[in-house]
Image (cartoon, rainbow, N blue to C red; front, side):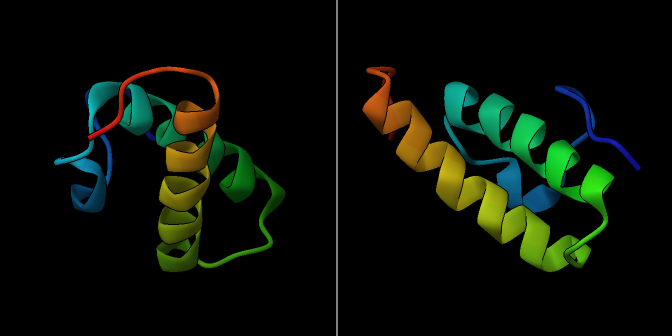
Length: 61
């Protein structure tokens, strides 16, 4: 099930918007490949998104 900016995992609800949007994008790409379980996908996507936002100059809490 692909996630959207309005429908996303609870684990992403308290993330800064920029991080959440990137995490959703990453998680959907990982799920599309079908290589990881959903829980691992969410955690991985959040971690990568935080790094990506930090490296690209967007504010992250």
